[in-house]
Length: 393
Image 1 (tube, helix red, strand yellow):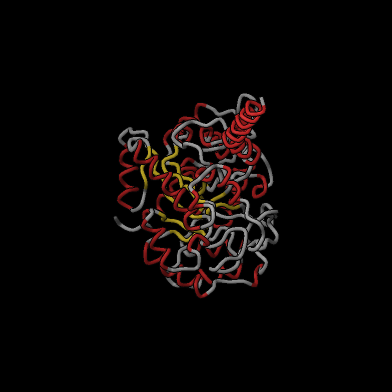
Image 2 (cartoon, rainbow, N blue to C red; image 1 turned 90 degrees about the horizontal axis):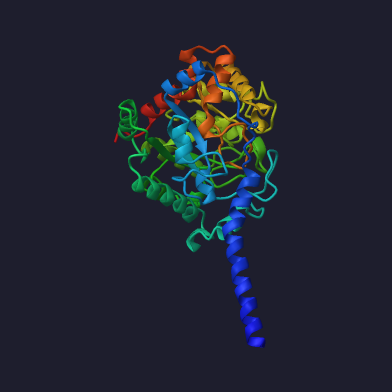
């Protein structure tokens, strides 16, 4: 009898463990990435939908790879996957790899030594053990997932590593093919683990964009949200990394960089950084948004500014609030330097997912932007920048 009881208990433990690993990741993602659309969705006029369908659309920032779900399948949680991106007429999506975030993460000040949120998430998702204790391997595991997806359905998803790859995606779409171009990025330079040789490792794995910092100071320098604040700039190692990225045709992303790091990067003659996901401080006074003068300087060096979709950076939770921030960005830096930086799936709530991106086209029309301005913001400026920055092929 005791043996049967123990066997039954063991079975229950196994079932409970299986249920945890199957259900818990989805529960966490639903809590952290809410979709705040009204019942029935936001209204989109036939005119806005027709314009939206003519656009070439690009977005600088989705963290979908963090959540260990099949991006080839339409999910009932989160904001992006290949079916929803294609439904929303997105041509190019940057998929970033998140490898570390501090416990108690906030916009003001975080310690690099704080407990990490991503380690238990990767363990709970049963990601490969090699990714549990190495930030480099954590980035590579996410890169491998994107590469496998592209290999499985090359007619729907293609990796973009060069200008030639980008052009091939655009030509395929112009010919009527419903295909998404994916660019691999890193949310911060800490997966380099302080070793410049790892820049080649990430580049060979397909990374073509890298933010220098995230929510904490790292080996490259200071974060906008780190302990050093504006007093921590670009380190000597960070300068090595920036020089290496320029040499390789990689996109330098200053989202989350401290003001002094921004200034240090801008002082490098050949650096042409972007700000991938942000708001405009003069329009929305959030600590997450960089000072307006630095944003102007990034644009003046030929960079583009990606406007986010979440309330903390646009000071509101509707498509109109996102559109108002885009208009504020145009006023600040000009219509040739504004783009989309949704922060989809980045532990934020948004008013529309990728499938419903036409509501933003409607909101921009409602703000009085012309078709030419909307085309630039929704993707034209991003495509131009990539065509000028990525390696030739």
